[in-house]
Length: 137
Image 1 (tube, rainbow, N blue to C red):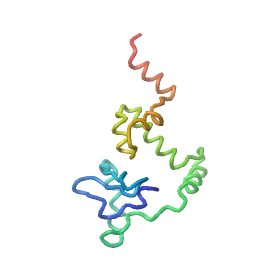
Image 2: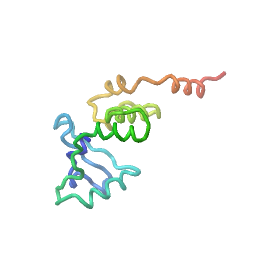
Image 3: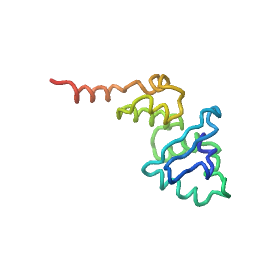
Image 4: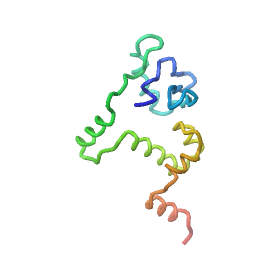
């Protein structure tokens, strides 16, 4: 989806545990993302099967929105979009105390202002939990 459609085998640096994501909104927006946790396993298959030294890691996903909607229908859950998943990731990072600057870097935002606007809102149930945990009776 999006940035990963352009990833090439040579963009993955296993020893350095990072992936270069190019061709984002602008050429200047290329960024390096660390490989952590299950990322090693998730990249193993595409790395073995990419065609040629510069082969694409993933085939472009023609209609991720449609496929995701159908998967949600089969699972009996409300439909979500790829952008909903992206926003959820950013929100989870924010709720776990990750600084807006780091969220912005990880998600390819130019600055943390976008992070504050999009991911800075805290759902009421999370606000309640924070207050219960941190406010003395």
